[in-house]
Image (cartoon, rainbow, N blue to C red; front, side, top):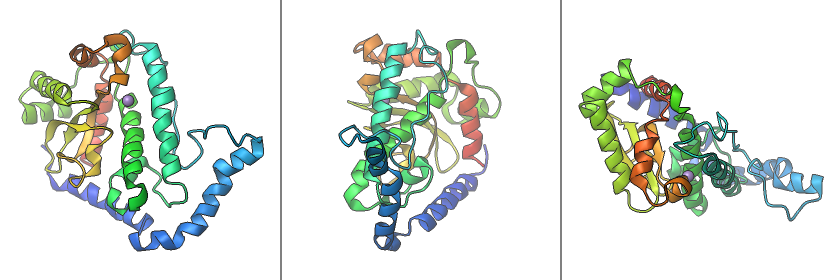
Length: 270
Ligand code: MN
């Protein structure tokens, strides 16, 4: 198992960079200038340029962007059907990006949404809940698309990742049972996670709503760096599985992109 201090160092470095970008005392002072800049390039400019002031804001009207899915909408079928993917990415994820951009309009924000949600305490209180919900929603969904792949391109984990799973969870099968339990016992809407904890180990947990383990112990029960995650909101599975969340969770393991999970595991220890 890699030494614990590496994870702590990575978090500290990120926190340090973020604090330089968003010094708490400097936010109010820099607001007017930044608001002008964002407005010039954002919703105002788009509406003025296209004469469409009543058109809903595009997800791209602001600093955060909705990237395309990394595969066609039908790539995960039959585990996740194309219509679910289309609505989930094109409406739900897009909606989080749009609302996040509206919440941070006029604020100096870090380039990555992960850095933003990793230090919510320095986000102005007036928009903190909106950033928590929609920044979490953006980060969680972008993460979710990345750790899935076609069913025929999902070889099981090996190497250092499998060693870490065995060391922390006992076995791959036991990790899947722990993860499934986290997914099924999350009441209402939320996410199940396999994450690297600050001591360098792996554990399974869940969060409510759009909370992320990246948000830290002021906001979630088990903080850390997620390397595998599953959306258990009903919008993620209801078309295909109706209310059978257990069937959805079981099928999910057929489309896990373990290569990407392994890459994220390596990054978490860098
Ligand atoms: Mn979702």
